[in-house]
Length: 332
Image (cartoon, rainbow, N blue to C red; front, side):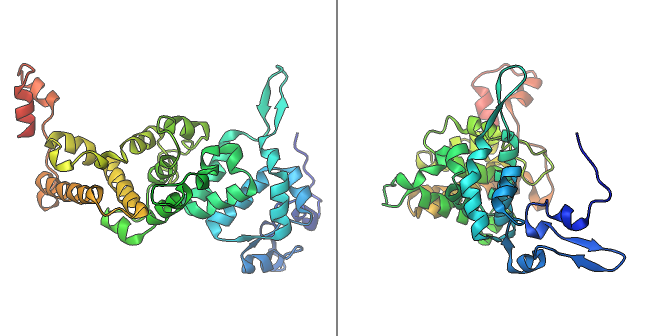
C-alpha cells in the first residue's frame, strides 16, 4: 500500500532520500534551489554522503548501498567516511532472506537487482568497482571467485588480482581499441575478461547467469550474452597452442570474421598486454590480425561486401554428394 500526502513539506520529503546529491529540489515559482542537506556542496566536491544518519538510511533500504557503490564507479565520486562505514556495517543485509507464505525462503533483495548495480558500475570503471565491492564485503558474498584473486600467485611472481587489473586497464586503452575498430570495449569482453581470471572455465555461463549479468536487452550498452561470454573464455588461450597460419581458411572465417571473433582478438590482445607476453602467442595474434585484414579485403574489396564464403550447405544445395571433395571446394 502506498500512502500519498500532497501536503508533505518538501524538506521532509527530501529527508527521506538516500544521498544529499539526490535530496535537491527546485522551486519553480521562486526560482530557487531547495537544498536542506548540502547536496550542492557535495555535488561540487564529488562526494556521496547519506542524508542525515547513514545507518538509518541503509537500514530503511539496503539497495541504497548498491547505488552508492555504483555512483562511485560511474561518476568517479568518493564516499563520505560515515556513509562508507555504514555500508561496511550493513552490507550483510543484502544477503538477507525472508519466509514466504508457502514456507520457503526468498532473498529480500532480488539477485537481479544486485547483478544490475554491479554490472553498471563494473562496466564504467572495472578496477575501481571491484575494489569497492571487495572492501565493502560485497564481493565475497556475491562473486566469491573474484574475492581471493590476490592469493593466487602467477608464474611471474605477481598475483592473479594484479593480472586482472592490468587486463581491465588494457581494455580501456584508446590505441588498442582503435586498432580493433572499437570506441569502447563491449560488455561481453569485460565480463569474459573478469571470468577468465577465475579458476575453472566450465562455470563461465553459470556464473554469468547466477549473477544475472544477462538481464539487459540487446539494445542496451550493458547487454551481456552469457553464451558468447562462455565462448570467449573458452578460446582466450587458443594461440598458446594453435598457429592461426595453420588454420584452414573456412575455419578461420567461421572463427574470426564476425563480431564474436573481433571481440576474441581484442580480448586476446589485452591478455598479451596484461601478461607482458612477447613470445609466440603475441606473434600469432599479429598473424591472425594480418590474416583477418587480408580476408576482409577479399570479401569486401573497396568496401563493397560480396557474398559470404562458400559453405558445405552451399555445396550440398548444388546436388554434390558429401565427401572429401567438400573440403577442397571450401578451401578454394
